[in-house]
View 1: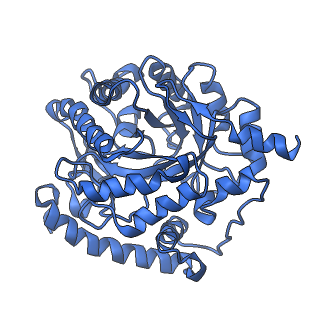
View 2 (view 1 turned 45 degrees about the vertical axis):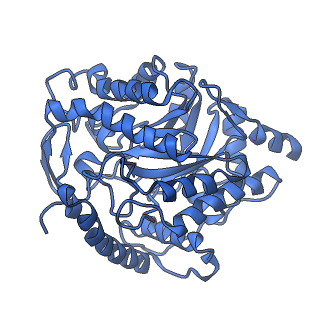
Length: 404
């Protein structure tokens, strides 16, 4: 394929079912940037970070782990979409992340059993008591409150000027827990077969759609697999796609893996010559007319082009590649090369993720040229910042926090 044909392929706009058009096929994936102020509000560094991705040509940037309520956060650096949020700061984040014709959407999150212990009392669909993780199960009333909670958060996002929302149902967080037979042992309408485990997601999508109207984009992230024995299977994931095809969602983001203790990480594992889960994405396109986006493992423009050219996906979602080069969309759309991924010698578990997280902080300060941390130093800095923000979170949301 000639260079101009490559450019044209990735530059094609993507029309969503709600009528919204994304200007190209290159998306900045949802990542937990942990750049909130500790009280659920955006910071200047966060605004600048998303502004850089907008300036860099991404059609859409997704803000990872924006909490629908303060009670079950993933980390104390998360933003919170509640009625008394700092709307001026949210509006500024939405404005700066929408430059250059880009979209910016919050990923609506609820960590459930994976809620950060120091500032939460974790609860999932069922009680759990396994090595490294213990939580209570949600009551029926608590589950049935979720659709309205998500609808209210989406309304706040819409009022702030964000171009759409993405519902997080992957990576082991609450809705991923509902979908997984390993973590959902309920015997009521929200458990059992995959249709029952999907029920709360269906109800949330419906409530969000009623709240935001027919022309506002709603995306969703799901797992292709949990990467855990007894967890969500590929066949289950494809059935979830079939069920989503009967909803009003506009973009299905396929990823995989979970942050449960001891689980293998897709991104920290051995390198692969192909993007993760591309076979699942291609099969998903056979069971839905909703556009499919794939997250994970894209390291080269050739991979992105081939995935779109082969009709395996409709959009390419890039996380670490866009952390290494925030202008990667412009780079690839102008026949430029691929980012150079760092290689670390025996990094500690979680150290690579921490390294990328702290590089996000550097990007938000336009200081990536001075960023020289190794994975261990990044972990230490990340943990220290989290500890400080936990104190701020407890002060801002005392009703949601576990005892000190």
